[in-house]
Image 1 (tube, rainbow, N blue to C red):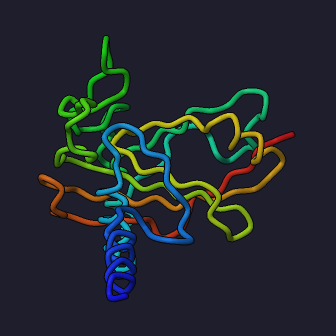
Image 2: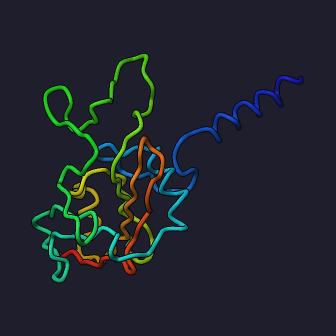
Length: 192
């Protein structure tokens, strides 16, 4: 009968050791070299983020001053900060080609490999999309552009949203600077 408490303890330990933000949190979409390691880093440091418009990422496209046409799904693009444009693929090494469509160069998918990506260095971004005060999508990425999924775009039709963006710089997954965020989220609406 002593095995039952041991089994419960082991099961609880395994559940608590899992990666990510925990129960009840919205599972992010990962692009570029984004992974659950970056998700945990953002979640740990965002409560103390530096609010600094000169260091925070800025959406450069599409033009959010007008409603976005539902018929044409946009590509969201952003700069590292107002003075550093960066590039669409970001500054973390990222490959796109035969045998590696949208993966980090260190990533391997063999049967006896780690479940996580190796450490990365560079800028990473956390984009949190809100509708009516509720987070409806979260993107963890090292890229500087993203297109909404068809499912998300359909849910956003005729809605007003805001995007809270964070940027942090890591060196082999250790936080070196940030996270930085702007003084107010970016607002946009999607037409019918």
